Length: 328
Length: 179
Image (tube, rainbow over all chains, first blue to last red; front, top):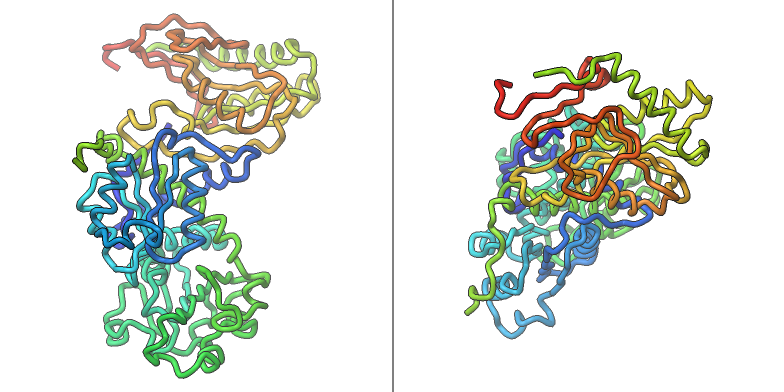
């Protein structure tokens, strides 16, 4: 049996991952999809482990995706959200997580509105932490599932040009996509309103492998795939776009626009979609759309990460979560 | 390093096991072969070819990776890579012949039995191995054996097959020997 090295304790962002680490996750995702296709969708590697889903920010698909992933690998799953928990009573993030860990959590999957919150927790508790999205910063499992979906559709990301269209400024998905795609050899073209681009990137400070093309039609010409980002309407109070109608006219993905890409080039969207705003229904549900397979692949990618974190070298070193004396 | 089975010995053992599998159940259409990665799958394909040549029947062939079912995942200290499992038929009601290269502690077979039950309910499960080297840690035995080999616990028994290794043979390195 050939074996490989996975030494990461936590999954916080993919910004310092090697190509080999990313490929190991993607290679492990493939057999996890097979598990999901079986008559009995269950395998035992996380038996006796507890995965705590701690979501302090709204999420349905990511939370459910992690829950199915953990349960398929036979973990016990405890799910809590900020509302209805002691967070409402003023408990600090650290106290909440320490308590959860003392209750026997081996892995904490967390989503938080503050960028960096998972790092804060990972430095201060013994459970493994998986970032399920923190503020504008990172959403590493989304980047990995998008990379898996594209690799499956295109064969490889090496030498491919991927367009990410829309509100990049507020998008942790865009950041994680870039961090995952570029080490695999892809180039990324960002296209969206200048007001919704990170100002430093507009001034020439974009990450390696990334170029900006404000004209969406030009960005799409000959591209290998496009990822439409959700227009975060809850973050548009600052007057960054003139109007939704204007946004849709200039930045909406239409059938005519996606036809500028290479034949059959796929369309992705991290969801939830504002159909009719950043993407036309005909595109979202058309022949190029991989949006539904992104959902299935997301479960498999999260299974792969849970497996690697729970059984990798860092986990095998005996760092199980401490028992109740930690809260005493 | 001593050779336990040469190329011709491996060929004869596979041919004999192919006959025994058919004789044992006499229900050729109900038989399926599932090879355990990463040498059992090669052996299972050889058995399928042999049965086709002898009987003119194509028995279904599957491939099983047991990594997720190992009982030592958190003890081994390294990451065991999960590979693809492919069982492109229903195991329900079939006689499934599990195929592996070496039968040793029996833990791999235990894991494979657990994995198979997640695919359905076979009528029966049999076990075919090229080499049985003893030292079982679980109450498991093979139905079809190429060669029984007495070994010391620390010996290293290695099956080489042309598809993966360039040639067919079975070798043994004695424990503590100079390789």
